[in-house]
Length: 150
Image (cartoon, rainbow, N blue to C red; front, side, top):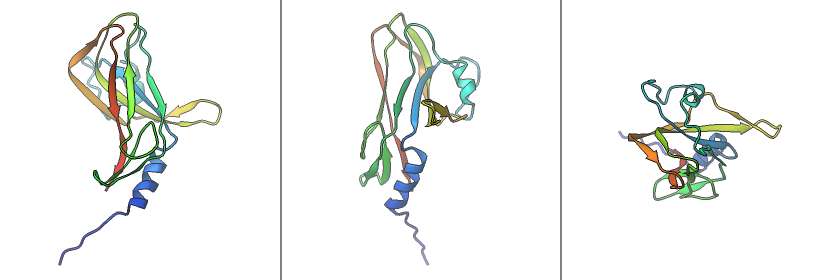
């Protein structure tokens, strides 16, 4: 006898909304070197090896309401409302080159005083291998999507 379970798209929407909608997302570049930091390391750890100088700034955005994508069978959320939306994190150094080998994503919530309280752990981690050296005024874009799937 086979048993099949199906999670409703409404439940995926509820879960994704609780996890992501209205949250701030920060995307940062880091040069991990020999630290051994992983996706399980703290945001404080990652911030200690974050790229600095050369006009570098973190990318930030607020996650909008998402929608169910029937093609991918998941509820997707990004920087604009609807399915098939992404967070387009753009980096373009202005005062010199930057080198990095990790891209890390941090979520935060509005603290009610005009600021944000960030999670203590990273949401996700992307690895560039080999490391990337980005020349001045040459932008790079990372397309990041948050989703809930069954």
